[in-house]
Amino acid sequence: MSSSRTYDVFLTYHDKDIGKSFASDLHSSFTYARFLVYINNNNLTSVDHTNSSVLQAIQEPRISIIIFSNNFDASTWFLEEMEKILECGRTIGHVIVPVVYDVLLFHLRQ
Image (cartoon, rainbow, N blue to C red):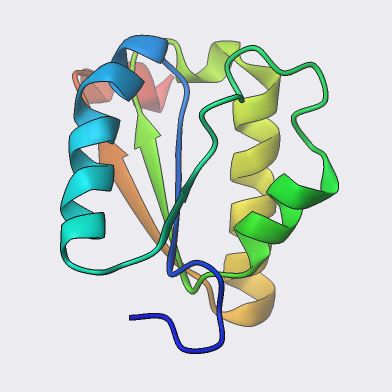
């Protein structure tokens, strides 16, 4: 789908179990549909998760998918990525798609 962009979609999540299942399936589906998807596979263990390549990857596509799973707020890097995604939504019209996976809405409202 991408013409001049490197990525069409930025996909982020917190829980490592999500990466093995839902996020991986979502990534595969987008790839099958010929979307170029950035998924930060190293972000679960990386100390410098806000490096320039990740920040560029967040800004570049028009769509970001944020997967909210259990304990999503326990990760500083995830919250920082989410903050950058929201900033892109406000400033450059970035489309943000929140996905709630295996979480009760009660937990999100707290």
